[in-house]
Image (cartoon, rainbow, N blue to C red; front, side, top):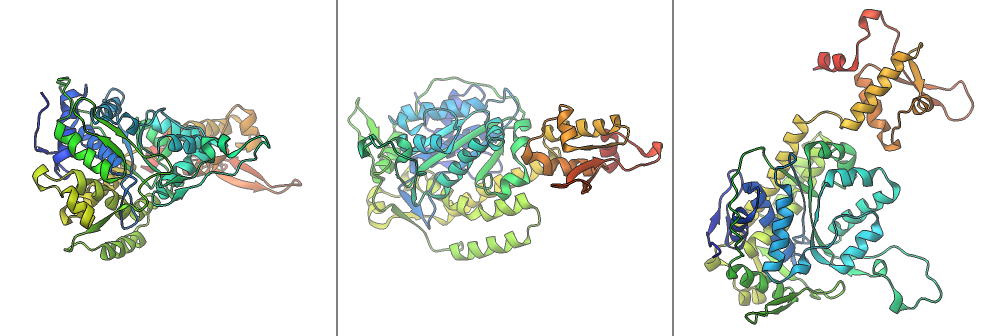
Length: 461
């Protein structure tokens, strides 16, 4: 029999209640590695997918992008397993997106046309993003993911493609459809080393990664229960209400429960309005405070995350107001129809706290992680060693490439910074016609002053 605990408590984060508490507690009962943070995030992401597309709060919608990283074997796969299982438990398996990754903007667009309101889980997310970022076509997928997040309150239009004259409108492919209010919720997983490949200033400054929330699974021993319990009926009952309010088809007949989500072009014509109840927290004042804090930030990653803090809070507040209240205290369906969703002061405060926790995780990770991604360190050390092999302690980029060291064109800026930290100069040679050559050289020093990369970094520390 499914348990019905009224709360889920995780130190350092707001208490989960109602539907989200039932989800999190069900995770602990059925996951092989039941870490409490995994249970908390799974419940939050699943709730975000349920509430997305048809509930609007000051221009924000509930679909979120979350990245969870941890060591191999820490149970990251449990999150995807339980979210998929919950989709079946609420009789709406199409809430979980098919497939596991994208390779182009057309792929992103087609996937969202097929499932405009869905949760997508991506394993090896760090490696996937790193591969996309190093490929011209792959980069279009990153842009499309960012666009899908940004256009939650509008329409996502396809790229223009040339048409065969024999084609008719009936032959249009998925990639040519206009998606009204795309509502993809994304959950990515990766190891610490994979994350270091993508969590760099360039990806945040471009806006690609600043929309994500980051959390990690701690290295700790946990005991599994594997009770094989389903969600309590009250979870389906409330979620069915939320989905029905959002214009989706819901059949509640016992033994034949079924939920059908709206198509890509058929959400509610006007989304259900969410409004913050009067109190200490005021949206305009929160926005002014965010702008002030952003201006004070000097670190690029911290600055870009701060610019998204309020938006993430508003997205989460929708979920918390609809699904995170004690069942007896939840706003009724008739009240929502008449007054819209009331975002409580407590829900808004908790949502901002969760979004802020993510920023703190990222800030702590940045402070602790290696200054440069592993690939930059490997290539930088190889170039440094190559300069020592050359009699004149210098090499052009062409000579570096010919030696077998292949550097992606997007990585040269970081390579330059790394080599500079190691005492290597980059100078321009204008002696030949055409574009000036970048020449990397080690200044002529006394033999006692020439040190290896590892020694240099230790001295610098």
